[in-house]
Structure formats: structure tokens, C-alpha cells
Image 1: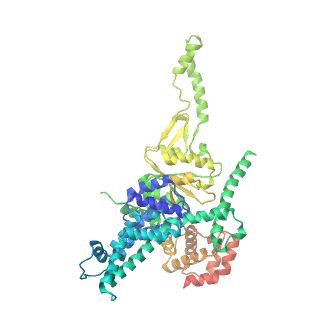
Image 2 (image 1 turned 180 degrees about the horizontal axis):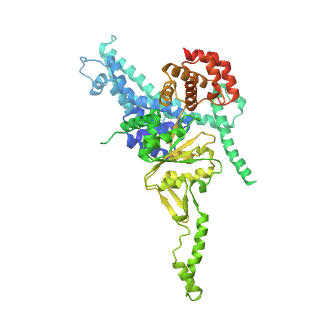
Image 3 (image 1 turned 135 degrees about the vertical axis):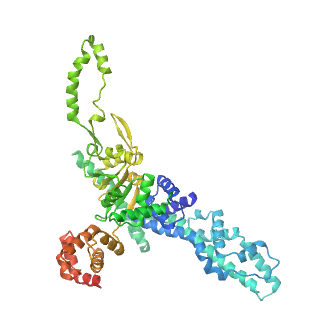
Length: 246
Length: 309
């Protein structure tokens, strides 16, 4: 479970919530006391230990919901997706993996996707252009090429009219692709985006204000505000010392 | 019987309610964690939302003494930590001088006199002459207590640095006497109105609790707990009126303490329900700036109308 916390802290840092290693250790100590079972308690507790300003607390709320929602989804979606899981089909020459794929419930699928995500280290995603690469990698780990191969064999054997089984399999496959692509998108929002943001900030700092595109106006606003605050902090102290000395 | 954290948190909520403090889950969780893990709580939020009251209630709930340290600019360690009782120390040296005659009587030469002087127990710097201030009192008490460091943002940065050792190690170094470590760690509550940014080092050591203005249902509960005489209808109207005022752009928004004061005022005036005249006449209980009063007076008819329906 410590890994989950470490991942969550990383997500928070990505969202510009400054969390120090010591605070992470504090959070771990606290979690040993209260456990991970109760979501509301978990949220209240982490919100006391990790974010330390009202603004950070707001960001924390959003990050928490996004981060822990994906972990709860698997249980809630099970009933909804029942209709997708096929009953038995008279198939003989397919491998266990395909059988498993056809019969597995939606929650199993989610679990497998996140496991495959761990194998390909999807949390390392940095840029949005990497999304398709990671999607493909996850699909490969899950053995999609085997299913695709099987489908093409079916095509050759049975001619042009697709059987019910084939339709089912294609549906499942499309469903899987959607799920994986959503999963990667979510991971990108959690772990990635920031490098882009930081990169942009670096560029903005050295750019002529007039040349910055209007669509980035909000980002520039917050950047300027942060720079101004830093400046004010620096000089207010100096002013105070000066007054004291005189 | 071992209780889970959830039960303990509920118990705190209930215990606080007995002392007329209605607290959210978040607040109860903070108190529970602070008590279990010996971590200080730093409470931030607008004035009048019950930050100081939380410390008072915690002291009542845990049946511990409340030690309060009000911070202000220029607060230093002689006011916060300890001070030597100079007067008594001076008297002591005078007594010593008289006693010294007996000790040194018959000593030959400077060397022997010095030896005798050294062997004489010196209590010039000892607990006897130490005047403990709230921080030291909190650490040396054997029963444990609740230490409230109020409005820590009003103090200087130097004082904040002084707090670091106390809050993380629960100990104080007194150069003449050595380190004094707490036997029973106090429950420490710091409050801040954010008039200046508190240092990261201090924030790092604390659980951070932000108490915002309450929503309408929580505020009604608080009014019920604090001013039980107020009737259901009036309570709903006055809370909804105050919530309406908070949505305006004012210099100082009315806090819970002001809502409570206002409820008491209305009871005193025998009001059964809210109307425009009543609101206009008692507006200065809620608002503390003339320009805010002017802004609200313009909006008064619509505010009263909205809260009555």
C-alpha cells in the first residue's frame, strides 16, 4: 500500500501541491493508524497531512477523487457491464487466453489493464504523444496480438459471413481498446501533463508577453501571481529588518 | 475494549456536541489524530469560525487544563518560555554573602577559600528561581494539558523558529539547566488568521486544518446548539440571510460568532420572524464596517425576501 501513497504524492506534486518527503512519512505513520478501508476517513486524514494551504487543499480534493476513483471503479462497473460478458460459445480451437478474455468480467478486465500498465510502467508517461505507444504496449502485454491473429484465421476459415462468436470477439476487442485508451488518458492526466506545463512555464518566463498566445492567458496569470508573491516575500523581509535596524 | 479509529472519531464528535461545539468529520478526525499521534494542529480560517473555541472545547472534552499563549508582535521567550526571577536571585546572593562568612571562616589563603567556595552548592540557576511561562508549563505538567498558541501569525519569525523544537521534539533547551523534555505530551493547537504566511518548517510539523465558513445546514446546527431558544422558523431565516450576505463582496464577511450574536440579539428583541426593518436595525451586529453596511442595505429587500421564502 505504501506504493499507492507514493504514487498519490507524486500525483499531488504534479498538480503543484508541495509535499515534502517528511510529510509523506507523516502520512504513512498516520495511515498505519487509520488504515485504507474507509474512503472518507482516508480523504480527511490525507487532507490534514499533505496539503498545507487552502489552495492546495482544493487541488488535493480534485486529485484525490481522480486518483482513487479508478481504484473503486472495478467494483461498481461490474453490474453494468454484465451484458457484455458472453455466455458459452461452441468454440474448440481457441487458446485458454482467448477463452479467458471472452469470459472475463469487466472488473477482471480493469484489473488486468492496470496490472499491464504497471508492467509497461505507464506512470512514466510524460507527453501526450506517448499515449498511443503506451496503449499499444499495454494491449501487447495483455495478449491482443494473439486474439487478432485468431480473428484473421477465423476470417480465412469461414469466408465472408461473420459468425456470432466472431462478432462477440470483435465487440470485446473494441471495448478493450476503448478501456485501455481511457486508462492511458487518465494516467497521462495524473502523471504526465506537468512536464509539459513546466516546460511551458520555463518558456513563458523568458518570452515577450505580447507573443504569448491568448489561450495560455490563465496559465500566465497564475505564473505572474506566483512570481509576484515570491518577490513580495523576498522584499517584505528585507524591509522589516531594515526598519528594525534603524 | 479496543475501538477502531472511526468509533473514536464519532466519540469525539459526540463529546464536542455535549459542550455545544458542532464539528464536521474533518475537525473530529484532526483532533483524533493529534491526540493519538501527538502531532500539533495548525488551524487556519477566517476570524470567528471557531478556531480558538475548538481548543477550549478540546480541553473540556479531554478534561485537561487549557494553557493559552496569545501571540503578538514582539513576543519573546521571556514571555512565552521562562524567565529568571531576578529579584529573588538578588536576595539569594545577599543571603549567600552572609552565609559565606561561616563557610569561609578559618580558611587559610586564597586557594583554600576558593575550594570551600566551589564545594558550596550553588542554586543561583535552578528550578527555584525559574518562572515558567505557558510553553514551559505545558511541557513540565505531569497531567498533560491542552496548549493553545493563538494567532501565531501575529508573532515574529524568530518566535516561530523557537516553536520548532517544542513542536517536533516536545522539549525545551534551557542553557543553564539543560534539556527539559515533556513527560506527558500536551495536545497543541495553533491558530492563524493568515495575516502573514506561516513558514513551511512550522507547517510541516503540524496537521493542517482549514475551517471555512459553514454551509447552511451546519450553521443551523451550530445556532441550535448555541442559542437553543431561537425558534425553527427564525433560525432558518437568519441563517439563510447570513449565507446570502456571505455571497456579497464585502470587506469583512460575517462569521459564525456574529451569526450567534445576531441570533441572541433577535431573541432579546422578542423577534418571531425576520423582516426588513428588524434586519436593518440590527445589521451592525453582523457587519463591522460602515461601507459593508451600506452595500448590504442596498441589497436588503431582496436578501430578506430570499431568506423568508
